[in-house]
Amino acid sequence: MPPAASVASAGECERIAWLVPNRVNITGIARNPVTGELVVAVNREHVLLRISLDGKTATTLVRGKTYLMAPLAIMVEPGR
Image (cartoon, rainbow, N blue to C red; front, side, top):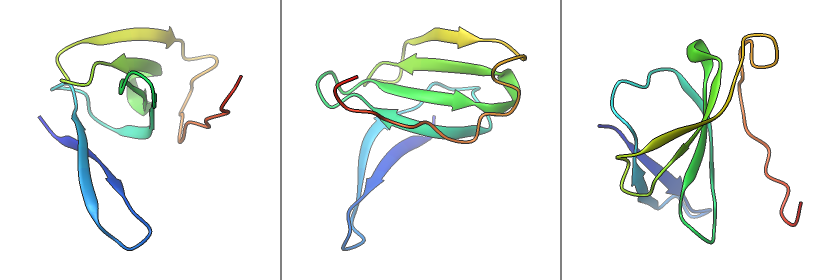
């Protein structure tokens, strides 16, 4: 199970979560600062997933080849 990490401006890395196994080609990650959950874009699966902090639970938020043909990033808009 690969880790997701954050990188500080000085270059320090910190593990923030373990990702769900068998999810390949994750192209975007955003973390909910309140719950610690991750939202990830999985390119080849055409899906956005919510992943629990322990990495054991993945919930599909959106799936669809039409709107998520090849997602490359996730944009976070605080307060929206």
